[in-house]
Amino acid sequence: MSFGRPPSINVGFKPLPPDRGAFPLDHDGECKEQMKLYMTCLRSNSGTSTPCRPMSQNYLDCRMNKGLMERDEWKNLGFETNETKDPEQAPSTQSESNSARE
Image (tube, rainbow, N blue to C red; front, side, top):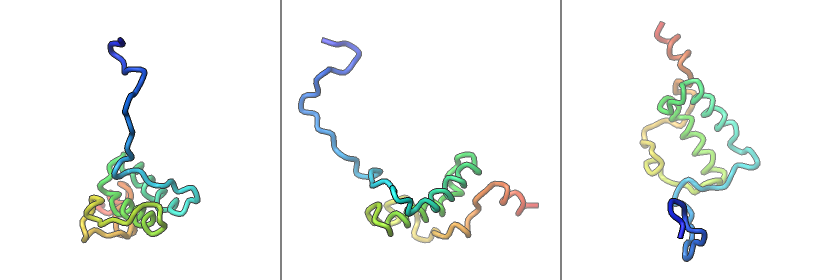
């Protein structure tokens, strides 16, 4: 008997894939540009995702259009139907929003 650690034999354990979050990798870089825009936005906003939501939605839209993930309704992906998918319409960096205030 082993105390404090899992047993060495997993009898009857069958792993199941997650409902969401598992989808094919983008090996051909079909949505690489959208991913780069989103990651740049995250870095420039200290990891805060709220200002980067349009880039995230644009990236997911690219993945759905290229068949890299199953098409789903935006509300199921955490987006409102009135949110924009155009990254040009959203603030992408704090410096841009700071210069707009001056």
